[in-house]
Length: 423
Image 1 (tube, helix red, strand yellow):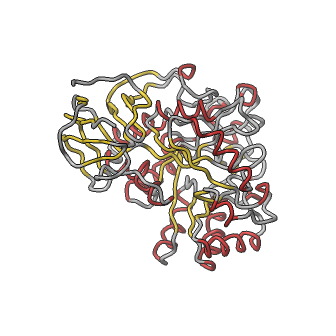
Image 2: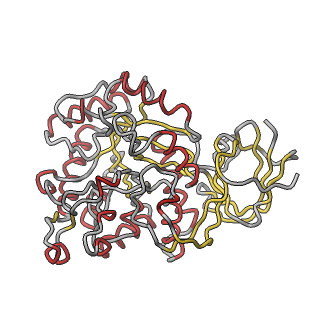
Image 3: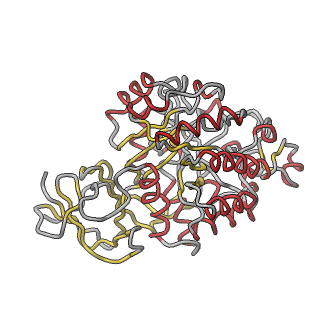
């Protein structure tokens, strides 16, 4: 493969924490030492960073291909600067066996970006019988999760964690007490009462996390909380880390940039799981991200068709697409002064790579040439019908945003953006 040299680039390096002008050379799908190149791309002072690694992406195959396919998800990812998507197992039927995982991997083979897969922790995500964790790891599963189907039986979850510990497998939990959150569709409080909607207190998140962390302490398992969204859950997370547990935490870009008031008059594109929180909770989680208590930001990409969203708020399906909006939404945090770009890139690229044992997330020599070139200040108004995703359920429709992806490379091959080069 012809060597390519990126010049006049504002290099965002999450490893060193640097943000400075420089050059980057790639060849044969890897980042190389400085040297001559037959192909030169003038970045014109725009930002060049490791490609985003997005944990927790929902793709509709199998069972809900009308909502999102691997082909459309791959195009959306490339357009959003995402070079690796890590797919959730909450499909129809769930990815809970080596055979199902092999089928999913075969369907994803034509994607323009890298695709890795989680597997269900229990069969059918039913929380009653452990999945074949060892065989699924051999088949390529990078983590195990039942997603929003929280395992109610602590004894079953303890057995899963114990077995996962023996294999070094990562378990991803959804901190939520299901008995408190059942039937709720919004965070409880004055706003929920005024709207007449059934609410759930952030206490449900804290209780779910406390239960999971107690079992992690007992079993020694590797654990990642997929979405910490409330201030009430943060002390438990701190205690677990202080105790030396192998625990990390993530949150979604929607919970970092939106709050419960955005629901306004029953806007179903703002219905999430867990529900959007108060502004105080949002700011607490943003602060936890800035200090490193929250490790990972994900899009929690959840495509839903129009029929699923055009319903009364209580009945509407939760979730939003986010592969293409992750970067510009995250730029809101940068422009507001909450975090800088290297800190952001630790959360969207370096930390996901390290937690899942993947290559990437760095601009170091010999790292994969998975890169995103973007203009952090480019303004635009989001039109959901221009998104590459098959489903268009984004809460940012019509929003003024900043941050546009100019180019995306996977293993040195450009998968998005027009070529701008000086040979």
